Amino acid sequence: MVAVDIRNDGQVVELLQEVLEDAESLDQVVSIRSFADVGLLTRDAGLVVRMENGAEFQITVQRSMRAIDAASCMECGRDLGSRLELVAHLVEDHEMEPEDAQEAVA
Ligand SMILES: [Zn+2]
Image (cartoon, rainbow, N blue to C red; front, side, top):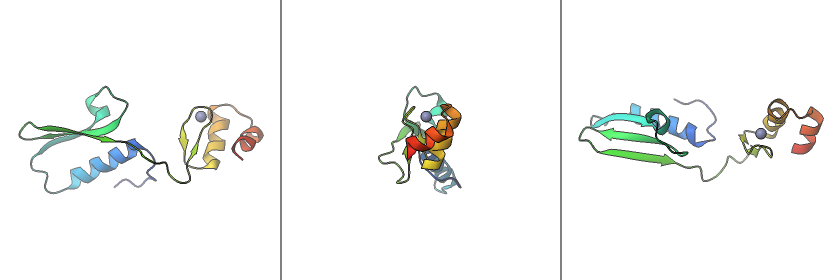
């Protein structure tokens, strides 16, 4: 099982893939692969499920709400888990001075 704090669409895809692979009634399912694994040209996250009879389904995962404690980076838009993580991100990835990063997030 996925033991991480699930926050983004890619993590939900991983979770779904694990749940589907663990399900017992999957005799008809030939494969369950992520869009990334099959090289699908899309920015969406999702799964391609192929059946024994040739039918194939695409399941797209879209986040409709962020985690309540999420903090988005004002520089690059990345979704960080908390204000503390955002400060660390600003310092490490945007070379901001720690004091300035604290101030920007406060
Ligand atoms: Zn950033």
